[in-house]
Image (cartoon, rainbow, N blue to C red; front, side, top):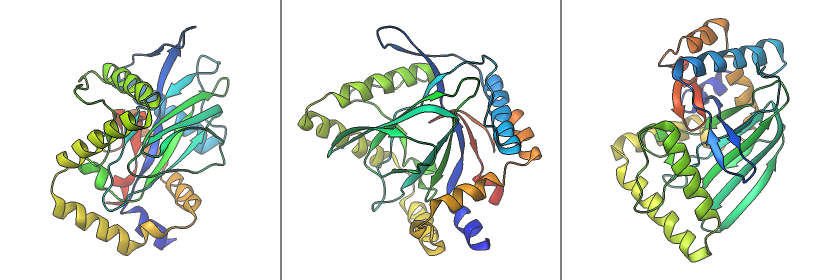
Length: 269
């Protein structure tokens, strides 16, 4: 057990609640606008119901809710880090993937551990079980994304708005356009996106140190990611959940890649 916690101390891990959306008859997507305070309360209630009662999370509306992640990608450093995701409370769920080799839409099941490699752009689409709210658990194999090794997707020549919901829409539209491109146009867009991301990362020596520490701890060599997901659930104590409900800046972020995010890795520092 000590070894797993040593590995987790070099990772980014936690839970996210994707952006709730409304989809009209034409398929147009509109994110439901909410503030940080409401998101903190909903995420904390969701995590408490799931972790303490083993019933997943309750939605006050008593109906299925569609939610989407922000389309995002990682440029990677030397082929690392991979990210591992699990979805809970879903009636149906999908991951859409764009990379230089092509595009793919995959069905996700709750037992699946989804592998996200560098140089890919992904988006999650989830319809919750009736009366529940879906969440995503994440495990990123090192902490380099804190220094810019991850970001919302955007096309060449476009700027992402500061408003989180505007940014969500621009990233979603860019993702859809790229998904439909021919292979050469898609390749150009991805090269531009990941090249720009690489150019903005800060402090190469710090990033190399983070990766070397993760490598020494064995973070890149874990064969059963399910053990790491089981261990991170142990951090959801009443105290931690209460801190999330209050919007504690170490344990709650909004907006994030998944909308409202509860990063738990600071608990090991």
